[in-house]
Length: 127
Image (tube, rainbow, N blue to C red; front, side, top):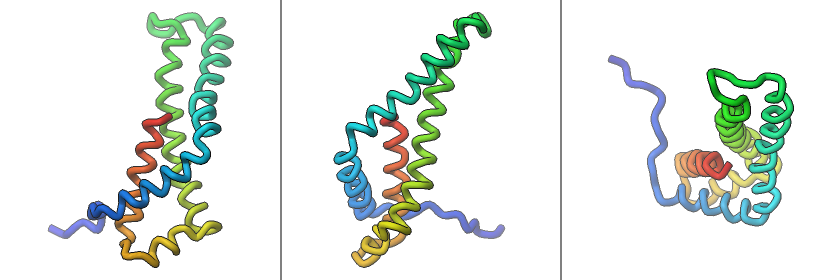
């Protein structure tokens, strides 16, 4: 049997430093982030749930607004996590060169990856 090349990052406490760094930056932008995390799904619910739901009626015995709400919440969380995992990581890697500065410390790449994974998961919970 061959050994898998996919291995989870090893947990070290340095990953918490990456998590803390991301939280401190997010805290500066917390107001607009919270408004957008709750505002965007609310706009979808109002527009599609009340607007389109007026014509749709019920789906599987549920009002369309109730049927739509679970999908909007899941979609919002997945969008937040994928945005954090792609665009935000790219921004920290290329224009900001944040990872270059982190690699100049006693941190391993595993610490950075694990810290970013945990941060993206927490952002998904926030949304």
